[in-house]
Amino acid sequence: MNPKSFSRLCCAALALFVSLQLHAADARPAAALKLITEGLVSPLNLATLDDGSGRLLIADQVGTVHVLGKDGKLAEQLFLDVRPKLTKLNNGFDERGLLGLALHPKFKQNRKLYVYYSAPKRDGSPEKWDHTSRLSEFKATAEDFARVDPASERVLLEIDEPQANHNCGRMAFGPDGLLYLGVGDGGGANDNELGHPDAGNGQNPQVLLGKILRLDVDKGEPYGIPRDNPFADGAKGRKEIFSWGWRNPWGLSFDRGGAHELFAVDVGQNLYEELNIVVKGGNYGWRVRESFVGFDPKAPNLPPTNAPTKDIFGQPFIDPIAEYKHPGRGKLDPTLLQGISVTGGYVYRGKALPALQGRYVFGDWSRTWALPDGVIFTATRGEGRKWTLDFLTITEPTNGKIGAYIVAFGEDADGELYVLTSSRNALQGSNGKVFKLVP
Ligand SMILES: [Ca+2]
Image (cartoon, rainbow, N blue to C red; front, side):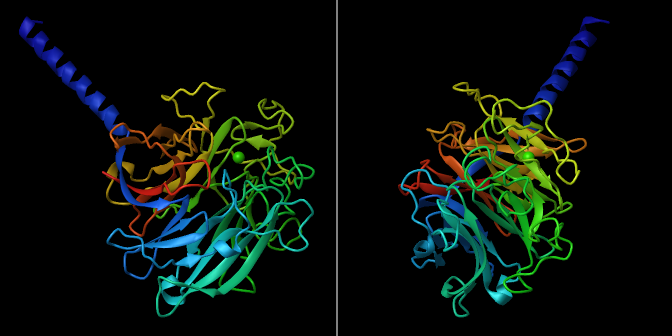
């Protein structure tokens, strides 16, 4: 080979190397965070006000639902105010409050919406239990779709909660028009305290705690049971159950494209956080399994090797499609996908960020408890059931840091995504913000 052609070959090899590198960089998608609104405490829900106006609804954990106009301003008038209906919230860390909001798929015609909130302990609930979760239907007024009639409340379901944490309350209507509702295991730790008898709530088909429920809000009083719910006849479990073995599925959403799969994360105990695709009747393992391994409530940091692989009905447990680990004690490595509490998101089907198309966008609340250090991840479908996790590169702010707790994600009518943050790990201040993911 003469020197000239050798140098040409080297140039070609270098060009190929550079292009492969660029391609590798391209493979990790990026987005900027555009501030949409602020001045909230802990915004947990975002929805499009389905009246053709393009306005958004933003629900704050403290019990208020705001209307965000096209002009970027929050309206003076609230959409809904459930503050008088809530149990007394803590000034510090609190998982109670207004937790879920979903508009009826036919809101434009029937003006109905559904909320899930933490009410005071109801009469007859067990002694020493904490509060009662409530699923209610409300109706917007005929004159003004941006205002809910507070007298329109119809209580659909109440669930007594032994502890203040793990209430979940995330909701989504499926393509089947049915309402899917995530219910946490009742709280405490390890699904093994007061109100978590025997094998815990997650594995007990006779209780609604630790389940994903499916209800028909258009039939029956107060709701109908879909005929093909796994325990629809009530013989082996509660009729409302769609899926079981959940700890705190903080994020429940249907892919608006593809096969319209139901995605749910599950917040882990001490070691793992998980992402799941939910199927009817599926048992996702908590508290005999966590992520891909066994779980022992008496030794939560030591996964047993002899953990069961089948539930009490002999049905195999379903593993997550992806997991990430908690940092070891004081050992956070910011280059690794680590975190302590997963916040569920959405499969991206919008237009603004083509590189995110078909990927599940979600995050971790914060990589450390005491400091606001939320991170955003993507999950990409791989071979078989496994999905691959990566960071979402944040281009704005330019330091790439969120600098807040990521309490929730939101999706608008166009499929664009939002990141909902709180500056404190407490229901304090007014530094809760909503960002839109933009190029
Ligand atoms: Ca699981």
